[in-house]
Image (cartoon, rainbow, N blue to C red):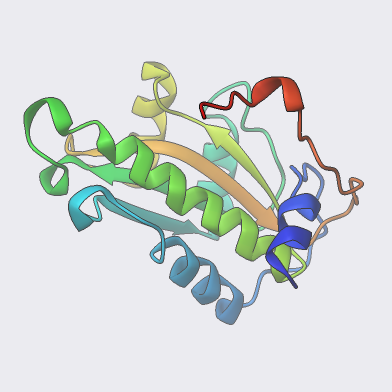
Length: 169
């Protein structure tokens, strides 16, 4: 699949089949995630791969935006012990967001569906997710990506808007 095709086919999928995602696909998703850029190559990301039914159910209740019935969830979190120091520490958010987009694009290329559910900066949701997964205070959940075989097929789209482009020549 060409990059342009993956970009346009990548859509939020919110309905999944019961078919589990094979470990080879999970490995490809994680390799894609860690191929992303990070500020000063600090790679402050950590990935929690969740397939256990009870943990998935608990994650579905983390916020009002996380109730998706997929057989796989990947929680992308930042580890502040590997983040840049002081005022630059919040670059972890950009680093983990780039990793997240790579997961979403790889999922599309593999014929999987995925939906990115933001957790950070919702304090209550962060606390719930951290508790479910046993995270330390240095590990901050950015999002939950629910992944599976799609039970729906949103149409590809190009969301380009000329009005959002500002040329400086």
